[in-house]
Every structure is written in C-alpha cells, then in structure tokens.
Length: 201
Image (cartoon, rainbow, N blue to C red):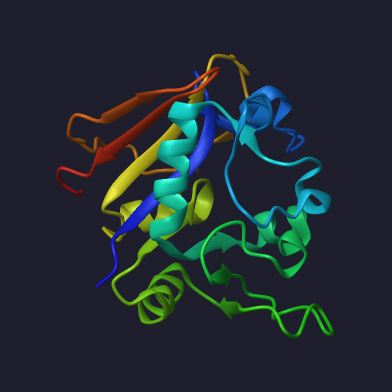
C-alpha cells in the first residue's frame, strides 16, 4: 500500500493562499535558484521553468520521483484548470468532486474523479501501487487527516505572514493531533518540513 502525505507550501501562520486564492510570494522559491526540478518542464502551465536551490532540488526531486498519484479537491482543479492535463508530479491525479469531469476536458489526461475523500484515497491507492500519494492541503487534505488516511504531513514553509486566508489544514475538529519530530531541509527562501503522523484522533 502506498504511503500518503499531506503537502502544500504555507506561510508562517499556516495559510496556503489568501482569501482571494492568491498565493502571493509563497511559490517564489520555485523560480529563484539554479537547479531545474524536472527534465520536461511545462513552463507555459506554471509561468516559468522551475529553478530552485540545490537543497530544495534534492528534496523536491525525491518527493516527486516517489509520488505516483496526486489527490486534490475540485477547487484546486478549477483554479489550475488541472494544469492543462499535465500532473505536476506522478502519473495520475484524483479529483474529489461532486461534479463530474468537465465535458471535453483533455480526454487523454490521466485524471480520475471521485465523490468523496475516502473514495479518492482508495482510488489513489489502486493507482499508486507501492508509490507515494500526495494529498493537497486544504479542505480535502484536512478531511483525509481527520479520517486517519495520512502518514506524513509535509509543509514547505515560507517566511511570510498572511494574517488570514485559506488554512493549510482546512477546517478541522477542535482537537489535538500529535506529530513526530520532522525531517528538516533548509532551502533558499523556504524550509522543508516532513512530519510523520504519530497518532490520530
């Protein structure tokens, strides 16, 4: 069974975007280094080629090479238009949505639509085999964590404070979840943290 991890870039106060879904400077570190992340870079999709620091390159390449499936919510799919049918990492994207795949949208793309978080993670497990499954932070990721479906929490922490916005963990129950000590990688303009989930609610 594939390992699942919750992931996103976040501000110091835990937001993955502001209230208008603007990520501000959260993703600047992806474009300010000397080391490419991927061989085939769809720069037209994300605006420019990915170039990061050496430390970030080793960490992100490792994560992306192990990831076989990405699970996201419909909101992220709509915001990115599904990256025009090119998964940002891995071979498949599972979209949790009560609405079906848009008619005529990139029929060749390996995108799968499910109606619940549980169904989405189960489908991702089928597709991933022994590979890792990335789960986008926010409401879908927070629900997966609450359901005990997440093995690691990975946060790329950027030194900016938003004050308000879309929280990394979405809307969680008023309770505590203990995580183990993180793996820590220091990049330029970003701190990569990966926490094993110690125990669930």
